[in-house]
Image (cartoon, rainbow, N blue to C red):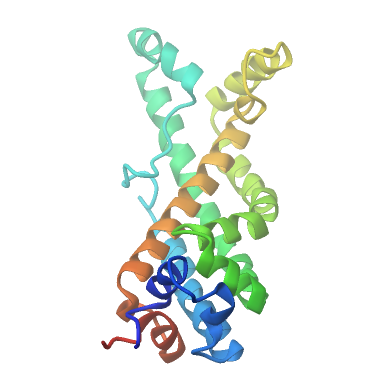
Length: 229
């Protein structure tokens, strides 16, 4: 019997005599790893392409970066005081910064794909519907944070309100009134940019699992697709 895809194969293994060790038996280790790499490289590249352009964040309600929560609380009062344009500029600046930072992720994400071992492939196949996304986050989030923040700082730092927020938020964080990641606009936007990136990668992963035929490359289609009865 052949299965629609390896995810179905794995689910059946949990209720039959099949074992996870049999997951790669139908394919060589080389094919399984190569197929997974092709699919994940496609998903990561599409996520970066979607976000790393004008309005990639600002025009997408799923990932649009809103004002920090404590600033949102003061938004109405600030607008009544004639600061509406300043608030709008800050929000636009935060999203533009994320859009310009995200392309920095491309090379690092693809490097993480190339480094996948056979065991990594097994873990992704058996780890749930977002296991590939979790793999990316584990392998890349720390370094991406370092790469994103200078770009975010360069863009958001041009606004006076950024400096005002950082001064007040830094003091509040020092008293334990704010989370450390909300203590500056740069830290806040960097975190939100990463969250948005991994969210879009997760959507690509879900799409590939649900429709293996769309996976790029013959190996990816072979590993995820094997249609038949």
